[in-house]
Amino acid sequence: MSPEKAELCGLIASDGGLGIYWKYSEERGYYQSSYKSYFSSSDQELIETFSHLVEEVYHETPRVYEDKEGFDAYVYDRKVYFDLADIGAKTGPFEFRVPREHLDEEGKRKYLRGFFSGDGEAYREAHGYVIEFESTCKEGIEEIHETLEDLGFHPHPIHPRDYDEENWHRNYRFTIPSAEHIKFIEEIGSDKPSHQEVFEEIKKYREGIRQYKLREHEERKSRKYEDE
Image 1 (cartoon, rainbow, N blue to C red):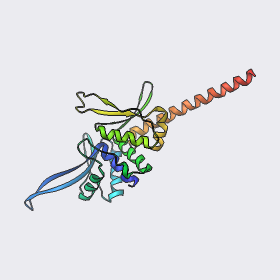
Image 2: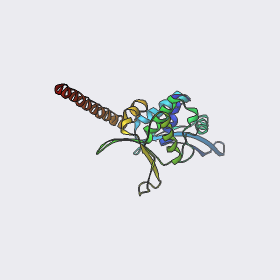
Image 3: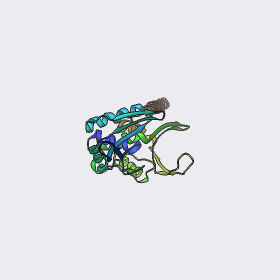
Image 4: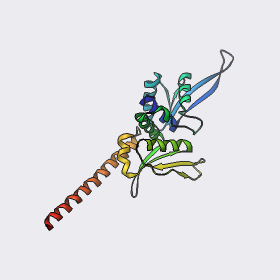
């Protein structure tokens, strides 16, 4: 699988879907099936990424619609639908699987980039920064976890979040260790602007820690030299 197709599948697994619907044809006098592959986001930049990837992989231009909640991009094409369905890009409502058998290392990185762009979180908290994966699909998030391990990451264990009034479904989440934040930013990254802003903060924060430790090391060497 090409890197572009891998990232496209990751995006669809996060906030996209595949669907078949029926439309009545006045001209023909019967219902016709229509196939759609789509992605939804409040970030126009992610919609542009989705559209670009679809054009690269399938030579199709998605139709983009905007409402007060954000943007929706649709591809109405039977071949695109069945190709993505065969891969398992989306196996049902809120369900997906990672096509690891079709992904080399670069493909895995791109798939994770697509998924994280849609369903990942990067934010600052009291004691530092958090890079977090989250999904309602337990099997899918387990495969995301395993795919990160394939690439040499050591993600923290998966934890479920309890039901609440806003989320009628259970979510599953895990975080990336802070020691691997720079590795994640450099190897996986994200197309989401708010993620990229936090990534820049993390890089400055980690560089500040590195410089502080370097100064401490130099001061210890200097004191040792003076004592001698």
